[in-house]
Length: 124
Image 1 (tube, helix red, strand yellow):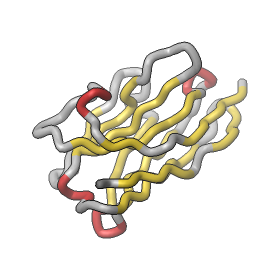
Image 2 (cartoon, rainbow, N blue to C red):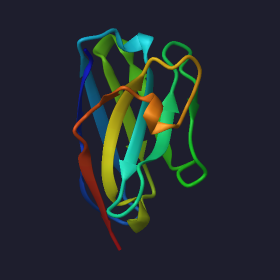
Image 3 (cartoon, rainbow, N blue to C red):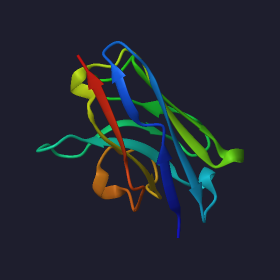
């Protein structure tokens, strides 16, 4: 059973930056496809970044590409999400998730393990 704990959320002005961390336990981080998702009130949960287990490849939707960077430190069992040039529309609860899916996927239904989420609020 993998446990995930997010941290680093908060309130930031538009144009600012935040770095989220996701600390994992109960499993070998390198075995999992990791993803960051977000969910705003009244909206569906959406992927903002995914990263492979060993190769380190990553993918992003167009809405955050060039502004968000996902990274992982398997030795520290931690995944990060660096968010720059934040916009008010980035306001949401951000979740870290782990998947045993072979390949890449941004479908939240393919992720078995989830953290509790951390709030990110971007003021205009």
